[in-house]
Length: 154
Image (cartoon, rainbow, N blue to C red; front, side, top):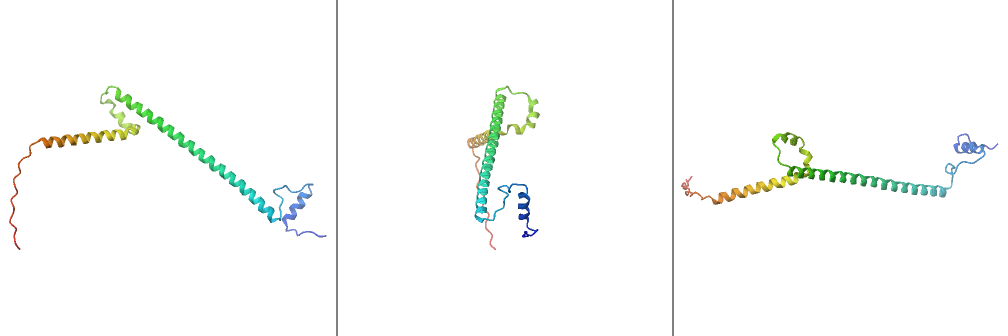
């Protein structure tokens, strides 16, 4: 009898499948043809590339939608803060009783910080200009010339 060695797993698998009445399935069937192996590798790498491309497109779409959601939320929050600020400006000034609650909500009006900073800078510059004009309008006191000390020789 001409039998393959018992250590050959490929022969063992062939015998196992052939006893069932049908051959090995297509992808499981081992081949010794290098060209066939190269073709399978090439096909599987093409499928892998296609799947990776679709995965990256899916990830980019998800990121774009997340950015869109955060932008819409930010714009809605800014609109709400602006309408709240306009409402506060139009309402009559309330007594100092509201000061503690405003201190607790300091970050709720973060969108108005640049505007408030510009207003403070404008007020500060206006005060400096008024102080400079007042100083220029005052008569300058006469200064006495300073006496020179004689230089000492060493």
